Length: 363
Ligand code: ADP
Ligand code: ZN
Image 1 (cartoon, rainbow, N blue to C red):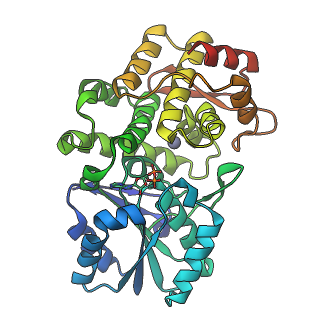
Image 2: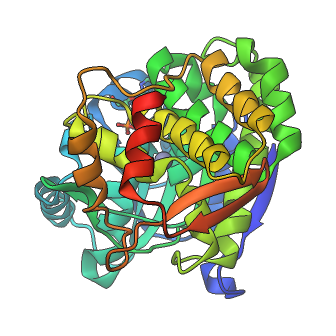
């Protein structure tokens, strides 16, 4: 089992360990028991994950003598709303939760973001532990303390920063993950490799063909661990996204707009993959990135079966208008993360709309 510490602002109280391994649940629950973070735990999950893994996880907690109750939310991004958050808070209250209770998020990004959000505001904040079960949540949303729910107009519009007490990433959960969900996580892994780690990029190129839910978890393990460490490093330096953390938005300016324009019918990872292909092309077009580096990174996305072109039915006008409404926009300036070389990203604020349109239409 790998482990590393995420230290936010060097404050011991806000630092936590991320544990990564295969079949680590017994040890995870032992650590939770020793951590003594709450008198009673509520295991928050969704109906899919509950059906696949709920009873087994609950058993481990009970065997360890911990007081735990399960609450299963509806599955899917559509459930990530204020309405679900309020219903969860009411259910917690109804079941006797108080300030000494703790929440455990067992699930993908939706469960993690929502549980973290409720934990951050329930009785002004209670402890939260993450057990991410999708590849995307394992390498991305479980690290960094961002929580949130969506508004009909845009994703993650209401949220908080709430660092967990611990994160337990057990790769064996991925065995039941549908291939499409797995690909979503791969896109974020590839993003981290492209913006921060040329060595990881090489490993991914060599192993792309075996990166799937039924693939060799021993191959995946160092890749997930490395990606988590990249995320940790960036988040430690810039928890609240004033500067460096923005580079994690590589591919996301356009990706978010594509997702929204598709009414969220395109998965996050696929939209980000198209966004990354555009950012790579834009970087090359503006003279920052050698064409060979652009082709190599785009080739990697394709190897993973990720899309690199906008869906034909999608209008560039619609996507451009959505980009203009991006949450991360400051005034009229739209930040685009571009690349000089793999591992050398920078934030560019002044790309003209016509250049973006041209790139989108030529992808
Ligand atoms: P993400 O982590 O991609 O943000 P979600 O939380 O929406 O996304 O999870 C994606 C879907 O995968 C949901 O339908 C969820 O119930 C399901 N899911 C999560 N973890 C697993 C797993 N280990 N096995 C099978 N399905 C899972
Ligand atoms: Zn993302």
